[in-house]
Image 1 (cartoon, one colour):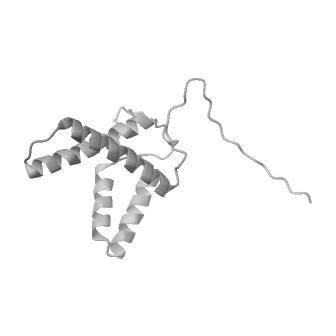
Image 2: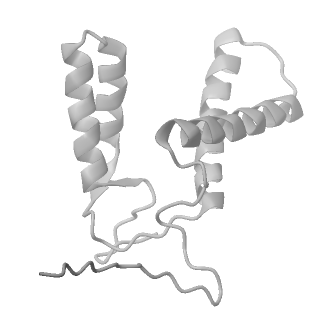
Image 3: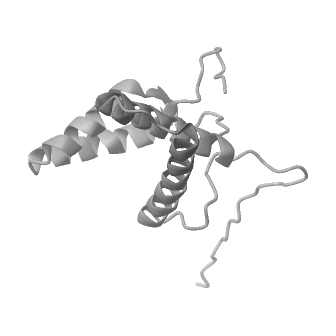
Length: 139
C-alpha cells in the first residue's frame, strides 16, 4: 500500500492510534509498568504514522501474513538462541496456531469480535455506507 506521495504505508498506524499508544505508554510508566511502557514506546518509534483521515486499505489476509511474519521472527530467535536442529513444518504449524489464537484473543479483548477490519477493501459489488438518523423534537 502506498500513500499519496509514494511512501509505503503497509506498516503504518493511524495518527489517532499513535496518540492512544503514547498516552498508554505514559500511563504505564506512571504505574511502574516499565516493560509495557518500553514495548509501547518501541512500537511507536518503529511505526510510521499516517493521517487519520487518509485512505488506507488493509485486508484480513495481510493482517494474518504480518502476524505470522512477526511470529516467524520470534521463532527464529528461539531456534538461534538454543542452536538446536528443528523441523520447519513443526515451526510452521506452531506459528500458524499461535497467529490464529493471538488474532482471535486480541479481537475479543478490543471488542472486535465480528472480525471485520476497519480498513478492509470493499468486496466486488459491495457498497459501504453510513446510516445516519436525525431526531426531530416536537416543540
